[in-house]
Length: 365
Image (cartoon, rainbow, N blue to C red; front, side):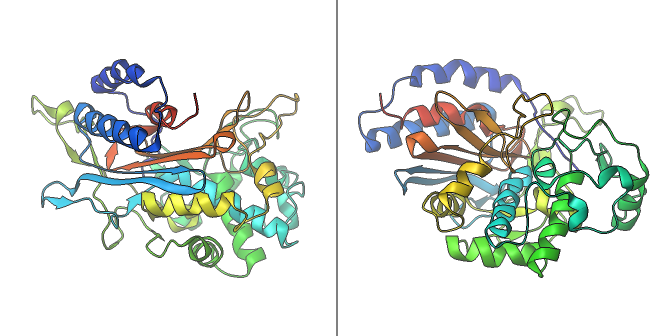
């Protein structure tokens, strides 16, 4: 299992040096679109990204939707608008929306302890509030490490092992990203929604937002039209180009952790989901605002996350995001009525590094 945050390559430095020339916003959407196309294609070349989708939402409309490169390099399969990309940890944003939907339905309270909904929690876990799971301030130990699930690899053994571990810190004291939080949230969604987590998302988000292609899975699942994931990471061979050779990136996302990283989708469908979220089709405007408010630490300071969403900036304008697998990201700029979605099949592409420069093209001077 690979839970990767960032891979930095020399080419990423070149992109960072090139992008500042895009500081000024374009005078028209058409001009912005053309500059964005040029920027993305240049970025793909510099970072050696095999395949990519981009979608830009402005004022409630998709104004740019492009697909580039290869979904599968060895078989020369092109990326199309229907190619599915894993968004990995960006799935947590969908889980945040699901929890707010349950709040609206009167089935969950964010300030309630998790033990109100789950019976088999260790004593030290029972006071953790739902909002603290969503914001990664729970203090829980992580159910995964660099090798994957702890406790021998099976779901049952992993949950047994993590429940025996001591807390990583006091509840609410600090932000600490981990997968245990979202494994528990999946259980709560399934229990309170009375259907499996993936079915809840399909019925309550994919369907109303117009996402017929979106599904779940990882490298081991047979998902039609799914992009193959690649990396330039060293494989430990004796080859001279071991650290500079494109190879497959295999990632494992167990079913019990799908709420933290299991979605496969397209840039167009994520864009439609963001539009549905923004126009009140999924949850109310008040609950969107609540969902995007940073979780407070015990000190009173803001945590790094809100309810399922990394909060990049709160002032002067709000910026929230979904970021996953060092290869997929979408940024939402509510005050600018703007969102940019970039999905790639290169682990280490880190689109969160260049999305802000693309977004700048569409912002008012």
